[in-house]
Length: 318
Image 1 (cartoon, rainbow, N blue to C red):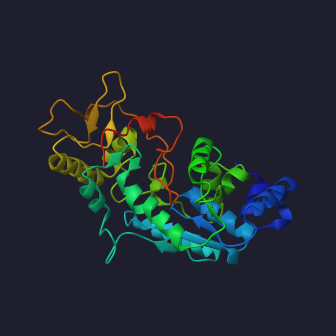
Image 2 (cartoon, rainbow, N blue to C red):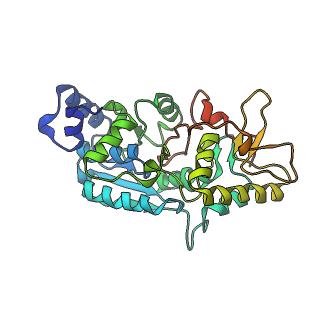
Image 3 (spheres, one colour):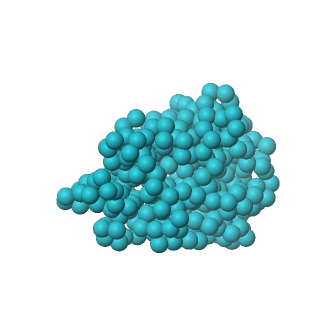
């Protein structure tokens, strides 16, 4: 639950701040001192609250809010973006590698270029369309810090990011400073009168790439996709088969972590009858994925592998 003091802070009421929160404000301000602070808005609730906190802490004029658009989001994400802009009183800038005159015309171009979906470092689409673009943006812009929407349940991700990107990204984590988790963020969004993105309403635990489905979603995620959005499931099954034909060996998003293990296709492949498909896997609930924050999607930067990460196919290479 969000405490009254947290809620009042997020709503911008300085009068209701506790002394503890005031000290945290000072700690955050000491990190950056002046503008601009970059808030990465990803379409998820944690990034949405992170951006609101940035505005409340540093002032509207001292913050830039940026969205990396892969043009693979459900249309309701753009409704959510407009609602957040109204709430913030500030526009969210959009940058992209997709479209006319850009490197790619659609997200599928990345998969077919590399003939793969996942590699050891994460999803190839996330690497090409988000991580690389953010690196380019860093070289062309000035900033004092970048705020990412990792919450109190993602301490390992925070540690990993600080170790890897402290000098270049200058990351800060407002949700961590104020002890907020994803459930807190959901409640604040709802109490602000903003409707949650469609993906959450459908029962998915992140709001990324709903147009195709997330390639790092895991077995439970794709079982749910098969039930609830079968057209996405069928389309991605076709992509797996086409990439398999192009590469000359199995290309899958999933991997079975049971004793016998092995890759898992979404649908059976006639040339690989010994490889399991998802219909043969025991049903399970989707595991939480992290909403993309301008870095990498999913869970690939964790120090310790969890069940969701284990389901990802790491046998592919660029």
